[in-house]
Length: 255
Image (cartoon, rainbow, N blue to C red):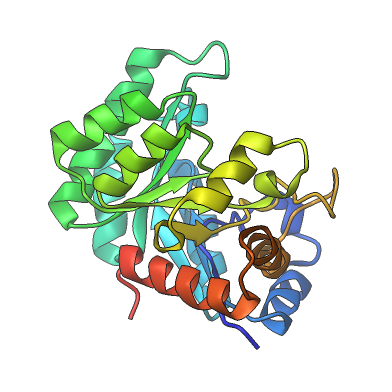
């Protein structure tokens, strides 16, 4: 059985409260040996920590998401440092910019994004990036702050932007979105980009693959996502699993 890593999975989410043990067992049964669980708010650190302590193979990432800027306070950045000191994470995340959702103050987003990049640099940690409609702005700050490792989560940019992330030392997260037939541009990227630049993810409970439809996504779907990528690229599941797992381990510093 191929070993797989879900590089972005919100296993702490309320959607899993009724059957989280079963969700983890299903993932293990199909070879998903590790899941990276990113926080999205300061208040969510405790739930991420509890989840990662309960399940072997779950690794935390500490960060504050741009969609929740209305909850973030400047002193939460000090709490983030304390959390890193208490439990060194796989990455700082989920952080970034969202220029798609209306009503999110851009200046506030940029403040928390930049300050968290500085913390990542301070602790020599990779970052998990939320970059919806904001790839160029995200890249600008990565270069300015000097961040050279991480994952562009749920990548949906252009080929040029993909190459810019790769040049910066980043991997690109591909999950359920490319499995839909209508996602022609994203499927082209999944086919064309170097396999060494790709990591697999679910973003569960969100972004379900085509075979799940509108249902809840979960980390075990990484196995189907890997199979879909192998079919698209005309290679074997074993090759996709081996190389994407190695990519995730490399960028996140996982032994």
